[in-house]
Length: 126
Image (cartoon, rainbow, N blue to C red; front, side, top):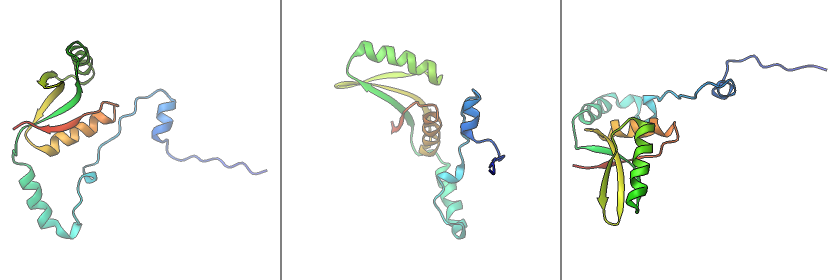
């Protein structure tokens, strides 16, 4: 009768059972797909991506009913803290918020919001 006890570090699941909020740390290496031996190429790519290449927003939803769009706008604004725009693009009212000059920054924010069960995708405006 041997009892096996695991006394490792607490996991994210353990913190959830204790009532703590789950906030995953986003690792920059998740988006980096270059090889370490190609450091010079990666440096040039990073310098290029730091320049403004347009204007990007997060689109949260597209609904057909104006009243429903207004209700969802208030809910999304309260949960994200962004001023949400309602853009009519026939036949839908699109709910968009935020604003970034690089796609990478917008993707990072969409990934961060997905950790809080807020779905959004990046759209290029200009």
